[in-house]
Image 1 (cartoon, chains in turn purple, orange):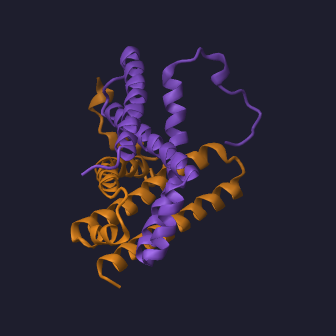
Image 2 (cartoon, chains in turn cyan, red):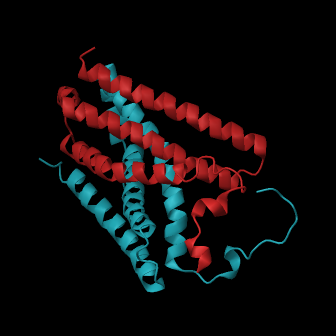
Image 3 (cartoon, helix red, strand yellow):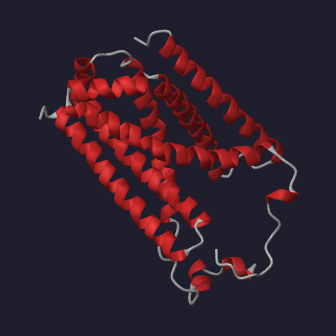
Length: 130
Length: 128
């Protein structure tokens, strides 16, 4: 946006907080985080193609304490972006725009993203699926 | 009433070209829809590979369907990421030259990374 000095419409500061503001900015934030996270996917695939040694290095980094914390964060970011993304697709179809529905679906996206993250890491810490 | 009966083309004529129109918006949605399926597949696959050794993980990706889905996932992932980052950059970077440079840079990087992912999967899948 060019800095023209013309009057601007009121910005965030004047509105009362609503959960839909949080899901809106989180969708962006998690999107950016996931864009960075693509590098981990790239790293993992290159490590697998590189052979047993590079794979072992990758696994050691991913399994370290810092690696685990990052992966848990990444899991939640993916879960939230997925849940809220589905919410956005439904809204793109023209559904769920009544204020009550809009707020309820925001909360649902948040709750489901946490539930999904907990389920995934429960599987991880309990020793793996299948 | 008469306004509604007018052909849409009549109204837009002379107002300039729509250029890409809704292409960015639509592609973002289509890649999002694909990623719902592909991301769930990807995470499920990772969960079955927990604590797996190199040979098991390697053998998993050698399977043709897994290799195809993996390339589909990584390609769509970088594509969707670029479309999203583009909007963020257009919204927040107000210096025009910096905006254009960043937009071009993320495209170069995304294509490079997507190709690297595809090559890595092919190397594993084709046993190179």
